[in-house]
Image: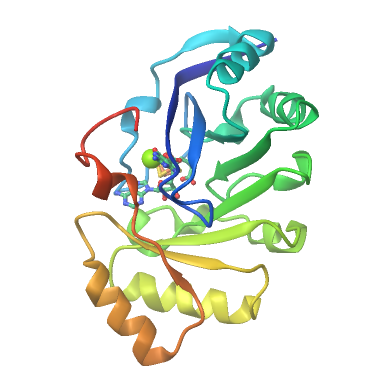
Length: 212
Ligand SMILES: C[S@@+](CC[C@H](N)C(=O)[O-])C[C@H]1O[C@@H](n2cnc3c(N)ncnc32)[C@H](O)[C@@H]1O
Ligand SMILES: Nc1nc2[nH]cc(C(=O)O)c2c(=O)[nH]1
Ligand code: SF4
Ligand SMILES: [Mg+2]
């Protein structure tokens, strides 16, 4: 009953509607995708086996009520639903960052599930499980990571179909590839009711730094 863990760290949440809040991150090892822009390739293979009580103790040591389970792709490990359930039982607010290819209904719906819908420049857009849209609770979040105009139009089309559900939909520029002011201009021109969400931690710290 172990999970393979790449890193556990305490930082400022840089993404989602929780951006800006202190948060403990549990980064699980392994991913089923290879997004062209991925900033976390070091999590594809490296990790150590930890059992759930050990992970819970490490998280508790930070004395922070907000926890995010990420990766890699957290939902490819069998024990992840159990870990999230145990965190929720201990009254943590739990965020899950997932790549949109896995069925999110296996996860306790008290967890805030942040579903990334892969766009064309990721090279993985054909892997999206769009049935996840029917599995969302009102507190779950959808994000699009956008690398160019084609990605923007792809995201605009899908976000339009969601017609405001769930609130909010995030549009995040691929760091270093699409300038935030360019995406801002497109959003304003189209009067899109979405949230422009640059990765906050890459503004606070060196964007190459790990563990933040
Ligand atoms: C490293 S992934 C881990 C969780 C999961 N595998 C996923 O893709 O959602 C966390 C988030 O970082 C985003 N991301 C990765 N590389 C990025 C980059 N270069 N610029 C902006 N966002 C990036 C991903 O799209 C995802 O939303
Ligand atoms: N500060 C910070 N916030 C984050 N939010 C989501 C992250 C991720 O890699 O999933 C992340 C991350 O790597 N760092
Ligand atoms: S799904 Fe997430 S972790 Fe996997 S390659 Fe894409 S961005 Fe990286
Ligand atoms: Mg990250």
